[in-house]
Image (cartoon, rainbow, N blue to C red; front, side, top):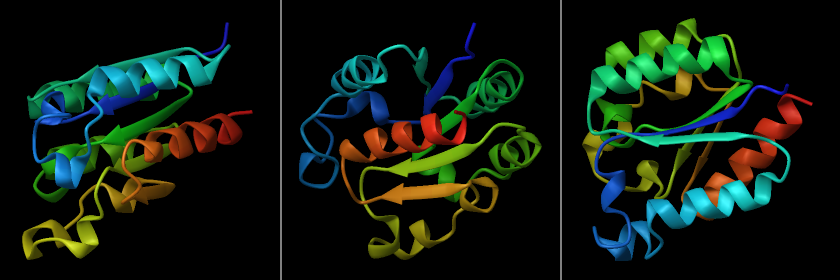
Length: 143
């Protein structure tokens, strides 16, 4: 059986659709999940969201053991979590980082990125479509 592609989401992403829609769009996280599952066809998707750093680190470790690839939108933990960075560096599957907005064009504190050094690719600024580009990349990287 093919291993799933993990899609992990960090803090506040459960608020998509209502939190600053001018930046993050109007689609909810459920909309993104449903669309990815539909697009993935025969590939299994393990889609999760947490507001807790330790839980996200544990899921990254699980994805490394049980998954084929990891798509990660770490939210604000991108800019703050060395623990997440360390878990990602130990990850043995391809990692694709996703951001709905373009952090490089935003506030100065968003210029620090602890995820990118461990990721095979980063997709940013394309809204919810970025998840689909990441899924396509994950499928191609694990074919």
